[in-house]
Length: 616
Image (cartoon, rainbow, N blue to C red; front, top):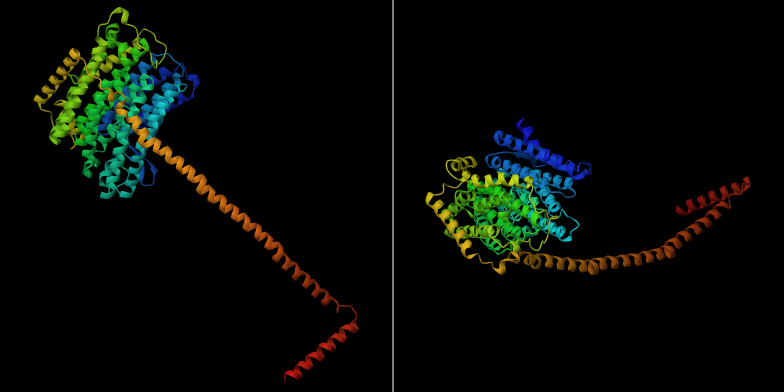
C-alpha cells in the first residue's frame, strides 16, 4: 500500500496535468480538477512521509529508476504538496484564457518537483530534472504571444540547461567509478571519478538554485504569471537545487574541496544577491533576488554539513516566499503594477493581504520568533564553527535580508495622499486590473502566513534536535541562545534603521550585477562567433574539400570511361574479332563430305608419324 502511495504521489498530478494541458474540453473544469488532484497529492504526501516507502523499476544497465522517502524527503515532500495546492487555489480565482493548459502545466511542474525530492537514483533524478526544466520554460513563457516572455522562458531554460550538463557528466562518471547510480552510493565511487561526480552535481545544483554565476535567469523568470513565480521560487525548481546539495552532502564532503566550494558559493550569493534585492524598484524583481540570496543560505548549509538547518530553512523559506509572491500577484492584479512606487500604502487598502505580507516580510527579515529567524541563525551558527570568513559574510547577508524586507514593509505601509494613490506605470500587467482581491486570492495567504510564523520550530529545540538526529550525522549543532537573541536584535535594529532613514539603492546592482550581459559577453557571443567560424570553416574547408574531391572523382571517372571505351572495349572487340576469324577457319574443314574427313585423318596421321620419327 505504501509503495502504491509513492507511485500515485507523482503519477496522479502528472496524469491529471497531462490531460488538462492537452484537452480544451476541460477548460471550465480545469481549476476544480487541478485543486482536487493537488489535495489528493497532499494526502498522499502525508502518507508517504509517515510510511517512508521505497520503490524501484529496471530502467537502464547499471541503474534503476528508484524513489524513496527518508527523513529529509519526508520534510520536503509535504511542503511541495502544500504550496502547490495553495498556489492553485490562488490561481483559480484569476480569470483568463487557457486555464486548462496553465493548471495542467502547474501540476506537471509539481509532479517533477515531487519526483526530484523522492529520487534515490540518478536516472530518476535526471528524468524529473528534465521535466522540471521543460515545464518551467512553458510556464515562464505561458503568454506565448508576448515575444519578451517567450525570450525570458528561453533564457531561463538555456541557462539551467547548460548547468544541467553537469548532472549528465556526473552520471557518466558514476558509471565509470563503479559505485553505481544510487545517490547514496556516489561517495563510494573511485577517488578520481568521485571528483568529477561532485563537480557535475555542484554545477547542476547551482544552476537550478540560481546561485552565482547563474543567478540572472531568475530575473527573467519574473515575466511569468505570479502563481508560477510563487511555486517556482518557493518549493519547486529553485528549491530543488539547494535540496540536491543537501541530499548529496556526503559526496561533497568526501572530496575535500566540494563542500568549501558550495559553502562559499552560497555565502557569496546570499551577500551579493542581497545587495541586488536592496537595489530593486520592482517588487517581483526584489523578491526574485531575495530568493537567490535565501537559497544561498541553504547551499551554505549543505557545504557546512548543517543538513537540519538547511532543510528547515528550505521549508520555512518556501512558505514565506510563496506568501510574498502571491501577495505581489494580488496587488498586481488589483492595481496593474509591480513597481514599488505604485504600491505605496497598499497594505492599508487590503488588510488581509497586507498583514499576511507583513508577516512574511518580517519572517524574511529574520525577526523573532518568526520562521526564518531561527532557521537562518542555525546556518549562521554552523558557519561560525567552520570559518570566521564565512561567518562574517553570513552575518552581512543576514543584515541585507532585514534591509530588503524592511524596504518592502516601508513601501506597502507608507501613508500617501489620496491624490497619489494611483497605480504606477503598469509595466508587464498580467491581466486587466480589477481593483479588488477575491477571497480565493486571500485565503491561501492566511495559511502561508501561519507557516511563515511557526515553521521556525524545525530549527529550535527540542524539535530541531529531533530533526538533526533524523537526517543523520551531517546535521549541525544547536544554536546558542545568546546568538539567537543577538540575531533577533540585529534584525530589529536594521528594520528600524530602514524605516527611519530608508535604504540605499546601489545603481551597479540594479541590473543583477550585469550577470546577463557578462554571460552574453563571455559565453553567448563567443559561442556564436565560434559557431560562425566553424560554419565558415565548414563552407570553405570541409565543403570545399568535398567539392574538390568530388570534381577530381568525376574527372577520374571520365578518364576511366575514356580508357574503358578506347582500350578495354577496343581490346575486347579485337579479341572477339580474332576469335570469330578462328571460328571461321575452324568451320572450313567441316564440309559434311566423308572423303574430306578421310583425307584430313590421313594428313594428321602422317604429321604425327613424321613427328615421332623426328623426335627419335
